[in-house]
Image (cartoon, rainbow, N blue to C red; front, side, top):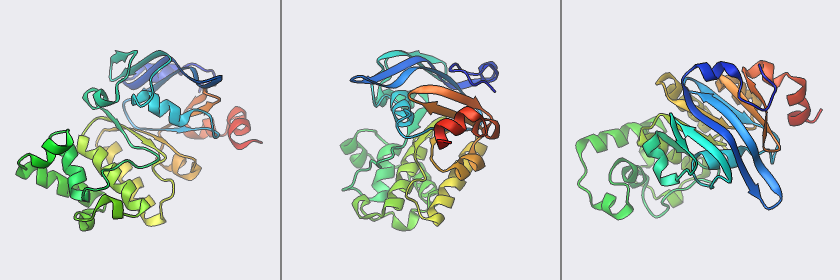
Length: 257
């Protein structure tokens, strides 16, 4: 395991899903992400952890094109990008969820899924003739995330946990290979938390690349094949979960002891 601020060598020999080369993001005088280079293998689940303000969400926003890069390059599934455009990331095989859930609140649960499965623009999607394959896939997704019984409810009337489940369903409907989850477990009741864990385990078994941010170390230990620790916008450590979390550098930075 390397404790340096460069990607460790071993994942570089394996197929990579995501790679960053000296990417940076500044907000005024604050370097939220500071010349960050890392590598995320195609196989398995990678968690991103670090103290508050360490750059975790900013990193995901840069990888998904929500924020523009101030410098450096992102490599998604072999495509080198100095400009990442959010609307193009599904074409590169990547999608993400948000810590603050983003849905079409005035639409039903069913239609929120259908917009993703059919024509991507909102109004053409609602007018498009639905194919049996669309209906069947929507049913499978909603059953998978536990939202089938709520399919006719407006998204605005869902609980916080149900909204998170629906957003995960929308991400699944894109059927890409790389999924970024920003705090997918935050604020969930135990039953919903277990469902999200089961979904992510199944996605991993299906060969998807899972990257998630979490402050819950029990979940990080349970789900992660590999962990990345950020501190002040830089890479503090990366590697197998237990050696990284037990390293003095990480204990000092993350746990403050």
